[in-house]
Length: 139
Length: 139
Image (cartoon, helix red, strand yellow):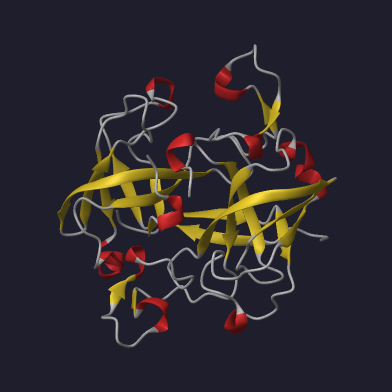
């Protein structure tokens, strides 16, 4: 466990959204977030084959504006809630600022996917897309 | 979109499991995988505060033995299934080999968490832990 093991994550696409600042973004997609486009890199377009309109997917993003040195915080920024470890919250501020977003595919146009609802802001890097497994099906 | 945007992911812990090789591991936790321990780095221990035994969490791992140059494959290694884009599968082989695991917390001992069931093999780096949101609750 000595030393720190580091890996490199590459942006395979970017979020294109009307949400321009973290301050104005909802905390979760279900809290009034808009639909958005995923502009995927042409080099990974083949990896999208098999994704269908209407399906639910798990979008994995990299919160590029997050703080990585935060280990405890007040959930949802509410000072009335006791300090909580970041791994017990969905805060974007965390050692590896990965975002998980359970969204629906609304439209596919080449290497662009319209999905929603999504609380991530414009310019957020996309690092992975996965199908939802039956045990993960949301309400 | 020119150039490649790269970020660094740090291991915040490691999986300790009886599963020693990828060849012998189940494809999903629900397919007979064992329980396992997460040995978290002491430096992130504060981030675990608030996680409770019995809760479901989403464990995010880095599949360190995966191939990152694969964009299409036969799902589950079944040649009878047509080639499919990796983003429409849960294969560990993908541009950013992140694993998502919906598991239950069974025991907490300092900076070690017993969780399960988990198909990831011994030595797999842990990169994040998140609570399950109500819309993501599995069966």
